[in-house]
Length: 592
Image (cartoon, rainbow, N blue to C red; front, top):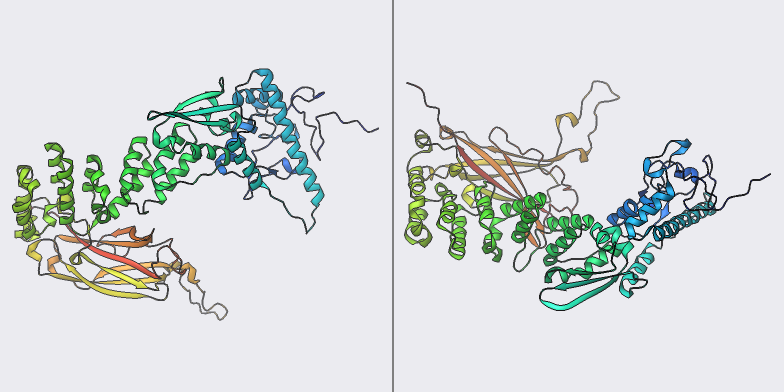
């Protein structure tokens, strides 16, 4: 005799019956054997995990509204339904504690989500559970109908559901909460008719605010209030479009209301749009904001961009907005890319004249300039014409005197009396012709290339007439020894072929001569790689290697130069700039 089915229960192959919370005749609440959290596939469907195949349920269709939207739905919404979805334990294994009383967990979850009283929460729990079971039943029926037919297809209407959510927000249908957004500059408030469940799923702040009240007044500054409609739309639909000037206000909203997915998305947008061109500039402002909110990754990205593209920043309107702290951080770095040290001094003088900081700050800034890297003729001119230098001459008198001494004597003689192992005598990445050469390689994937160029022996005027010749070799498909063809005496395996794609780009820079003038000095080579971003040619990578090594390690290791669309190519050409920086060493004094 066939046993009649009880309402709210279902049987699956190889599984025990699953008790449904709140269903009549369900008996004691019990977890039906959950083993793992469902995952999303590329189509916005929930992949079946262990235990789901036996139920014949495949994947549960959900609204495609972005990864963070889905994760918050499962983590805070469906995950609280007494373990009905989050955990399946086949074979009668003991379920985790939150799942031992499914009906009670459902009610508690809905209390947390909606702030409703227990009775209302039970109704929410029953409704949500029934809705989920309906989804599972429909999915099982669809899978049974397909039955492995080769003509089977999946019909995805997730965009339609997304549109319905947008209409839900725009029209305020079935709204159960109201947000009133006010600014100090206006007496009028923007009113948004919202839904507690959707807001609570995305933001724990909104969940708390709407727990015991349905009308909430929010006070926002004008810049964030202007974007609040976009912000709410993201909570409903999981997507938002922003512009450069909207990045900081949107990040502020995401941080304030703890919408972590949006916060990470805006931070990633900022890091990937540092090169975008704007009328007033934005990288300096983004750096200052990253410091305020403690985003170290964004700070480092902004600081690196400013260092490698400083010449472009010095001539822009945002240079005046650089803070004292940021200016000092930049002046400490040896990887600044600019035309010369004189260009940097001119920009610093302009900053000091505009900002008029305290004398102590101005002196710290002026002492960070590397005066030995400026030619004596230019130093004389600065002493005679610079109002800033005249005002603070006493603070930098010793540095100027030392710079003139450096230019008057040979570096070898100078090193006997002064410590040259300090940043004052270490060049930055100067783009002037005396420090290196630009090298544009057309169609770099074609074959090996080589070039020669000359640089000065050092920045000291004592060596002004001495030049060094350097040879550079570029190979687009250099193979390490381990991957080179192996020759054998046997006929069957004479050569082990190596694939072209196994090679990697290689750059070698060597001196074409040796000289006794090299005593007490070594050479650091720096290779700048320029790319076109947002219509501008900017530095994307800087590779540095010393005299002990003639090539840059991992040079363009991840660049695919075989493709004409490679981001490293500008009009099918690779743009390099090779800089040679002399590094002086103090002599070891013999004890008498």
